[in-house]
Image (cartoon, rainbow, N blue to C red; front, side, top):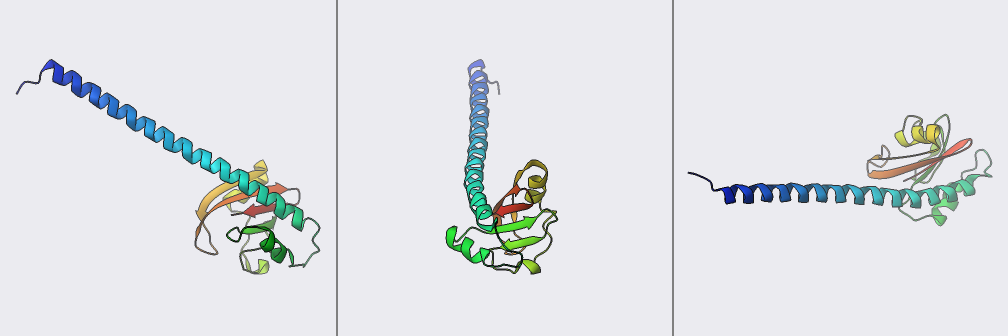
Length: 146
């Protein structure tokens, strides 16, 4: 069976159009994902600033920050205040800070230590739920919100 010149050209341009359309869709999805991530980081950065302002003047051993933070922030938001050694100082997720693992090796915390801010999407070791984590360094502490 012989394919005509017109059929070859039509097939070529159809495949070229399909490839271009696929690339355009993939580019747009990637752009939307990055835009959503930037918006979420901006929002979480504001929440981290609120958490930092709330716990800035805390007294050692005072656990009332978690209660105040829970009232100030959206109920689905988790916040954690961590020292640069990875020790959890304040946690709004329901666990006692003393009972929590060291957070120094968490990706977003490491990025905050080296670059001032960091983020990561992963499953929580505490609640086993996937979160978008954002951490920001404030001198002697790191505030992480999810």
